[in-house]
Length: 113
Length: 111
Image (cartoon, rainbow over all chains, first blue to last red; front, side):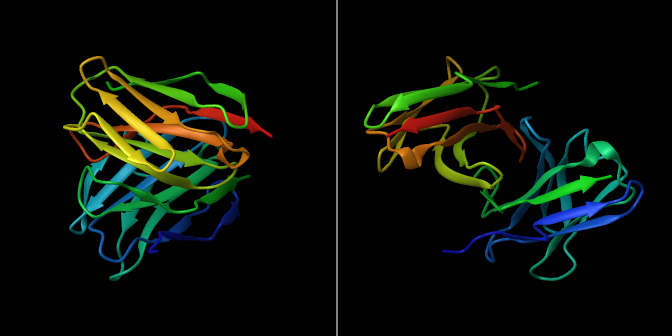
């Protein structure tokens, strides 16, 4: 069964460093998403992406964040200058169409020191 | 702003019991609602999607219902098993593309 994959599974970085989180969505899906979950808190929406542009973004997704689909299979989330409060589990998801079932990847656990 | 609440926050039941998990949302103008399962430290596994025009959706021992007018959904688990132990998350689609999540109900099924 097709699945969303994410790399790396864990990342430790120093405050102020740039990180890139990578995702490979399900191949025939058109919508891609990033969510995050701070330990013990709700899963929070960051951004959705369709047709090579951002469809929607939350207040969390400020100028420090960017997304890109550099080729036909990868979808990336870049955090330009990490802060301590960026420590969280980051989930990538994809769906065939908007408002249809979103399939989530296993997540990347980011720790900012 | 859409808010999703799940009650109870935690639930412990003996194996074999039928149980109901509750989800409520403040804005009834939703499109679809999706239930997920999350195991500790892991990703989210989609269980069921209920479209706004549906009242129920079933998958194996799981049955999810949706009442948009009252802002509620329930997830019914029949004949619970220890392997069902996990956190169950409810999430709603509003007018946009984002899923808005509740905090989840952590279920523990003892053998």
